[in-house]
Image 1: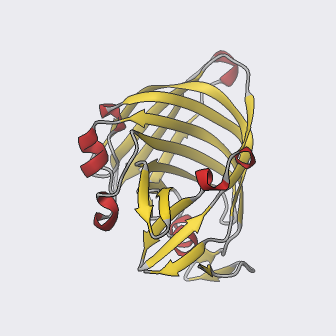
Image 2: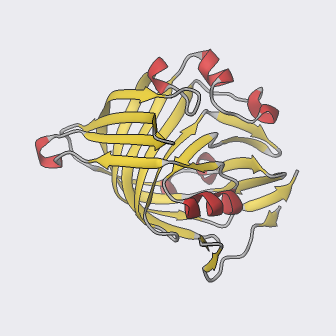
Image 3: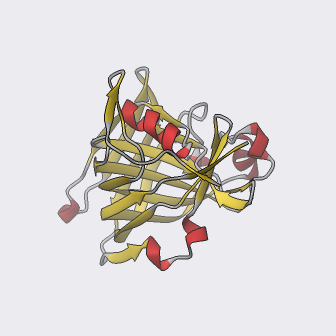
Length: 236
């Protein structure tokens, strides 16, 4: 495999910051594992047609992340992973749908890792953690609601997590975009705490409607630090 574009000094091009990998990010968010109906996983997960028939796995994954800092500044994102897909050298998890709040994240996410990012507006209201309040996230596109999620963390101790404890292949993702294949293995560490998805609502034409399925696991992630490395790429 050829290596992706070399990291370097950030530049300003057409009012969008150009920020090559690697990236360093800090923030908090939620991770969900969801068991969805077969029809949703097969036909409503926004998987590229060339890869659609290769999807495997009983679960999909959803992540909301609020990055307080990154190589392109603070931003928020909501992403969907439909399970594993077959790529040129094996099966990998892959992001099939993702919205972010910053255009610089869209441009650089596509260029650096082949992640099919799109931009929308985010509204986030955090509850009082000490009082067990709910965290509410709303995504808006062209003035219309794209997605709404409401979470509450459970009253239990935080546990540390570190992707370095896992085999690299388990945390390696792959994407195909613009005639190229990208492989990358983000590294992350922080704390997790059990949480609950209290309510959700989605425009299924824009994001998979996970309310049609059953949440089998939900955690709140806090104080995490993440590194998005240089991707390995190849022409298709």
